[in-house]
Length: 482
Image 1 (cartoon, helix red, strand yellow):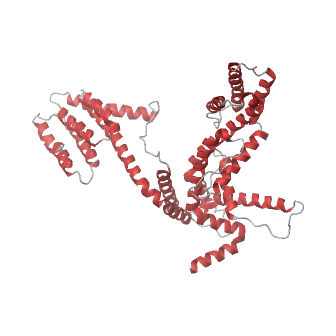
Image 2 (cartoon, helix red, strand yellow; image 1 turned 180 degrees about the vertical axis):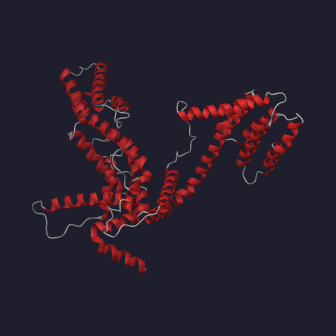
Image 3 (cartoon, one colour; image 1 turned 135 degrees about the vertical axis):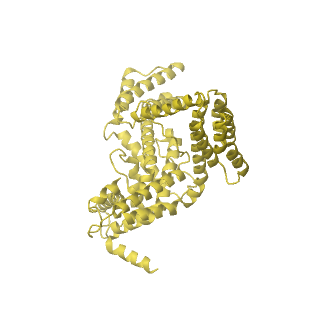
């Protein structure tokens, strides 16, 4: 990560010219642990679908093949021992001992009756004594384990329990018992996560801010990328104000004054056009990086659909007016063909050409059904050509839609959280209004939470950038005396 990479380069991006601070390995590891814990807590709190899954090694990989061979060898040995004359039970007894501990781990503090029963039935000392007298019932023990698992498992595992009961080979039964127990352990972890989520959501702002402060204390360069992100907006806003003062009739007597809120909001807007593959995110937004990237990709798809709809309406809108079902069908075609448009292997120009051809087919089909003349070849070629040109740099339709979406997203950042009502959608975006409002709410929620958590850090950066070190020093001295 950028802030860790910068530790060994003498903090050359620091705002001040103070000597570089030596950072120990322990401090680096402490900062990494803090970031890991903070990222996990953030993900659990904000992602309603967050859950842990079992790691599955690809069977074709070396690690996957090795694990399969080792596991198969173990179960083959167990089978040979149980089929021996007389049978060898030591490996099987150790398995039941492990099963007992796993079952006990599922119990709540009040489950004493079942706890005692499990300990009594799976008493390994007793089982060994029975084995010495050839009186141990391995199948009966397995049946008890399966029955107990059925009492403790989540409903989603009922089919797995039924399959266990239907398996007759004892070695296969034991193998599958461990597989289902692994699934039950993951179910338990995810249940705990769901139970923990409301508490984390209440404590998230204070928790994340405290953890990031610890990171900052261990790694002074942890805000370098964030500072550059905000500084870029400061320069852009200053340039915009300077250009405004040069217009005829404008007052040019006072020094340009920037609004910190405006600067920060414009910084957030940059995230909607971020190159997530090549450009580092600000450190304060790393916990939301995946969400922001997914949101940006979906937004780009909506922009393209809005562009296609606007071109179609401009060219054939008069012919298709009053046919809402056609508009829905054209939107669906565009959305399906544009799926995955943010992948590097996606050939956008070719897809846009295909969409244009398909749109012409659908429009002509509708016109024929209504007994109207179809689009002539010139109109069709023009429509397909305009579709294909959207991906060209500085395309006016794309620029127009992009600017309107940016204005819409900017208006969302000015609303209270949560917003009492959504702002009106600019012209030309009605076709994607529902999806745009949904994405806009997601974006505003990310931004508002980020402001709550990192507001004090942003305030310090903005004071330095807008008012200089002297103002920052006064603010810090004032806060220390209060």
